[in-house]
Amino acid sequence: MKRLTRIRLNHQKALEYVLQDVNFDTQLSKFILESVNFEEGVFFVDLPEESHFNRVYEFKSGGITLDIDLGAEKLKNAEGNLYSPRFFISTDREISDFIYKYLTSSSKHFGIIDEPKTHPQMKLIDIDGVKSMERESEFYYHLSGKNSFIQVEETLRRVFNACRSFAMMYSSDIEDGIEFPEVLKGIKYLIFGAYDGEAYIVWQKNSD
Image (cartoon, rainbow, N blue to C red; front, side):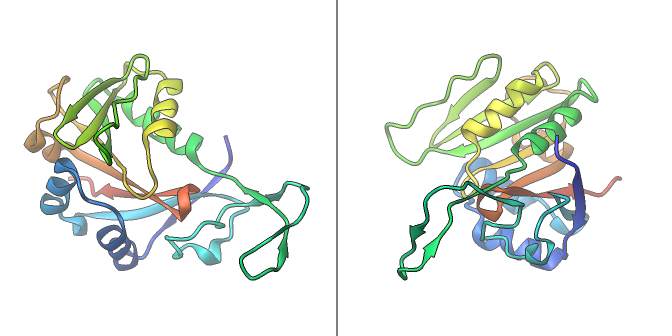
């Protein structure tokens, strides 16, 4: 795991990104958008210690995490300028660990990763040990403390789309299925893709 620095984000800037640039096309995401009072929580991002912190509010752009020169042959960009291909480190493993620790801290803690169905031929991804369901034009992947870290990480990597998906963690007495009012009552974290998939913005509800 990489060592991370947690940055509490300017609330208005983070909220504007979430409301304007995150795709809220699914039934669940629309319900969340209409029902959650974002003023009752805070936004933060966890970034590797070597990140370009001066770019923390460039939510739509990649290049915030440490980049590594791949040492490959130089390429030409659209303007005809030469550049060296570089690899940017993602925090997929770290956000998976964050989710996993929440899930395993209580038998009443659950998570959902929401994925819009973008074309008729799109099908649920079968991930061993992870419950999945389809509702109209969307897919849901349901996580609990019974899932291993590997299952959580695999679900995030295979399902989560930085521009279309979001993840939600909540507390509930209902183990199976997704009952929207019940989910809303217990929401603790909402996780949104940002920085071209290199990191995630997290909204945390204030403690009651």
